[in-house]
Amino acid sequence: MSADPPAVDTVRGHVWAELRLMGRAFAFGGGATALLFGVVYALVVALAEAEPGAPSKALVVPVAFGYGLFVGLVPGAVIGGLRVSWVLVGAWTLLPLVLVPGALVVALWAASDVVAELARGVGEAAMQVGAEREWVSASIGKAAHAGPIVVLVLAPLLLVDLGAIALDPAVLWAVFVLVAALGGVCALAVVPAGLVSMVVLLPVYVGRLRRRIAGRREATGDTALTGTRR
Image (cartoon, rainbow, N blue to C red; front, side, top):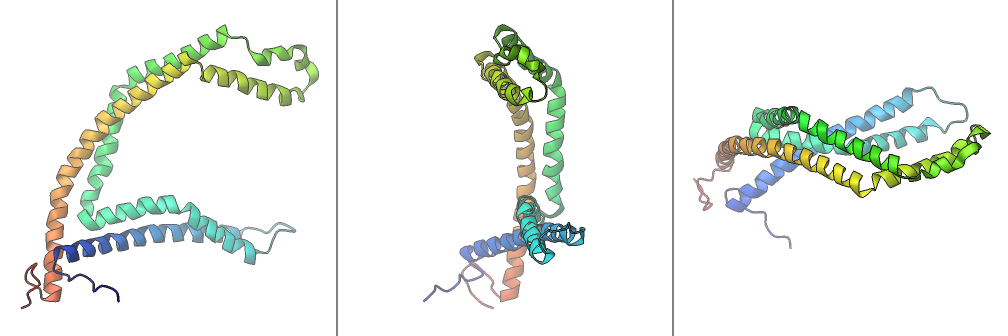
């Protein structure tokens, strides 16, 4: 036999109620978004002019619908997460959506000169390595006059040259410094903004949680976490 569900007015019961609330909010936002993508893809295929010899739309439209659902999974997860946040804290959801990107933009603007200098360093390192090495693609020599067919030979050799430059220790170090600097700038912006958002949103969530608990007690007639009834 399955265990009885936890009483509503217990700590466990309220935890399960909150999880169900978040699950429904996420499923509604994410599911509606994925479904919208599926419908749009299906409509585009259904309304498009069929090419001669193309498979029947009775087969293609369901496939397009399924593909649209798949494409909509990622945006659906984002919308579902936003929906959960909106249910839990309401319009305060907009705070981190404005504060974090805003802080990131300001930080990148303030560090733009340093980032640009480091990016130039990557280019200079690549140019120096390229000037010092013997290019494999240069060995094609006079065969370059053979016409367009030479592209089939030149392209792989050029990729080898570019790959060797990109994997050179000097270039790798310049890229590492650039990425580390960008990561540090982003962290200095995002972490404080995220902490401020958490400090503001936590009391909002607690206040709304207390109101939801009071509403559940009112709906079930419970008066305390002990499960006593009126």
